[in-house]
Amino acid sequence: MRLRLIFNPAAGHNRRTPGLVRQLGEFRARHSPQIELVATRAPGHATELAKDAAQRGFGAAVAVGGDGTANEVAQGLVGTECALGFVPRGSGNGLARHLGIPLRVAPALDLLVSGQARLRPIDTGAANGRLFINAMGCGLDAEIAQRFSRLERRGFLSYLRLCPAFLRDLRAEHCEITAAGETLLLDALLVCVANSPQYGNNAEIAPGARVDDGRLDLVAVRRLGALAGLGLAPRLWLGNFDRHPAVRRLAGAGFLIRRAGPGWIHTDGEPHAEAAEIRVSIRPRSLQVMAPP
View 1 (cartoon, one colour):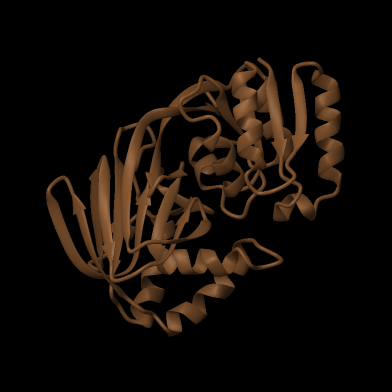
View 2 (spheres, rainbow, N blue to C red):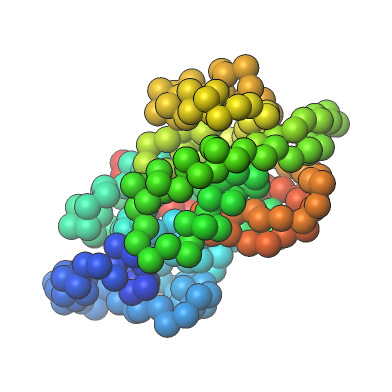
């Protein structure tokens, strides 16, 4: 199988690991001409490179970066036979963790050429036309994603450092959520629509969610105080987040989320300014991914 490795040199972990370029170059040399290595030059370039790989008959386009790079590569692959591969280099790596992709560079690269990886079709989602492969959200996590994106140094600890400031000044937003004829009215701190169970870093926002079941899982957190919010957070790592009384969960092929006004959303951790109304839809089994057996 011919593979195009799409390397984002601006991604945080990539930028801080100068030896990675040498490691990728040595991998390409060992497996030439099967492997092609291309660096991105600007936002959106990974999508162009992935589209080109699909058109030229590559078996997979491999995202060497974080969730944002994987999202960009996937945008060029949805609906094609070319698969998405992963060399996880991000802060969260939610989908890669769920699929069981090795988190260290050498084992992740070895999986790509081992002959043991299998092609697995998964669902993808769209929020007002913006693709997501793992999760999208609005409210608290979108605001954090927006601030997180401006940090020079990212990572789980940086993410945690942002949270206390938000917990001190929690703001719920009135939302009307419609799914399969059911309408839910609530003052929500956050609304997340998940494809996999994970946010990232093994934090499960939607325990038990599956990436190939033809439905998305919406998880909404009602208004609650700062102390209650601190008590809710550990449930992300205990597998029972959705059992808290302040949490509502719905499942379906699509959702309509109406907010009080325009605001931030995120798709796979990348923030976007969006309209008050958010239409979320699913494309079942629209993306092939390379996963461990």
